[in-house]
Length: 152
Ligand SMILES: [Cu+2]
Image (cartoon, rainbow, N blue to C red):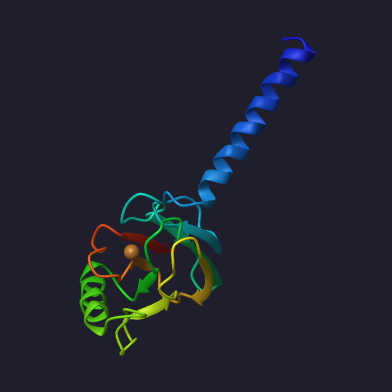
């Protein structure tokens, strides 16, 4: 292996490591990160990122980008699927403009109901390691529009 070949090999290796590190940030159950961007699917009632990992006890920043042309929000609930169903039912019943229940005890953090093309950044802290569901509470969007935030 001459110098040139070896240099090329190591460059490729380093590039691959950077790509792996970058993938860990955006979801897919990778390494816990304090900053996440989650976008809506432009052509359906879903989030593009359905799994994110965050560290426990640190301030987390989530930017929700509504990349579609219909209204969506991002609501992190204090629990799993059962709590998500309750929050969705109560939020639907509460109606617009927020579609959020008056009693917010089951909600860790939530954006406003965002118009298409807009975004909002919210911050919060999670104290208990667990899998938490996030959902859109616009009527009819849940259960397809949901994901899981893992605090570890
Ligand atoms: Cu939605």
